[in-house]
Structure formats: C-alpha cells, structure tokens
Amino acid sequence: MQKKTRSLLEELESMGNTRDVNHLIENRANNVITSAINLLELMKKHYSPEKAELLEKKLLSAIRGRHQDRFSKSLRKKDISKDESSE
Image (tube, rainbow, N blue to C red):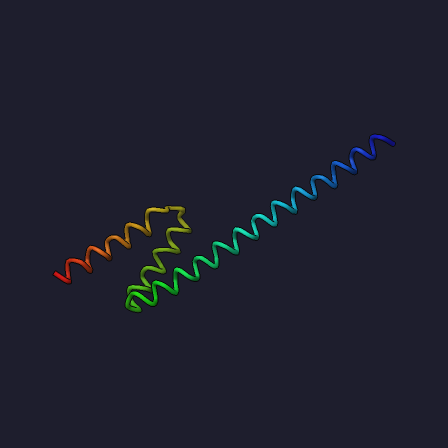
C-alpha cells in the first residue's frame, strides 16, 4: 500500500512540474510574440514599406537561424546607408 501511495504522489508531483513548465513556456511565448508585433509595427512606422519588409524578413531569418547578431548587423547596415545618403 505504501508503494502505491508513493507512486501516486510522484505522479501528481510530476504532473504539477509539467504544468508549471507548460505555463512558463506559454507565458514566455506570449511575451515574445507581443514584443515582436510591437517591433514590427515600430519598423513599419519609422521605415519605408520596402525597408520595413526587408527588416521583417531579416528578423524572422535571424530567429529561425538562431543568430542574434544577424538582425542587428542588417539594421546597422541600413543606418549606415541612410547616414551616407544624407551627407
């Protein structure tokens, strides 16, 4: 009897941990998605439609490829081009 109680308690405990991890993942995903939507809207507001579309593609590519610097480099390159054209 004691062995059954232990395994039931262990099972309940493992279900709780899984639910906590799922809840954590859900919350983080919601935060990331909301932030990404805000970023896309900001890019559309401050850049031309062509540049905003290109930056959106670069952002998604950086996420897919798990390369954090990829988007930053493309943004810096755009800023340099903008600065050079304004001189």
